[in-house]
Length: 69
Image (cartoon, rainbow, N blue to C red; front, top):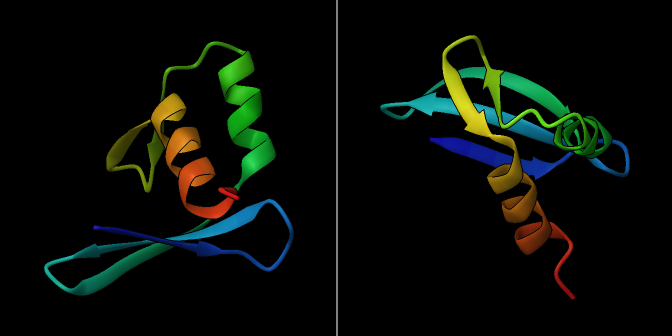
């Protein structure tokens, strides 16, 4: 399970990975880095060296959850 919360800076997010209720790792994700990956045509990125995340889908979900007006 991934928990995504706003980060300390504008355009950043804290991503926490949990497995069976136990917090495993935390990662600071920058929205600008995601947009750069999308521009470069990268479809999938690795997160925590264990999970593969679809870049376009992650951008869509972040837009829907945090930037919806």
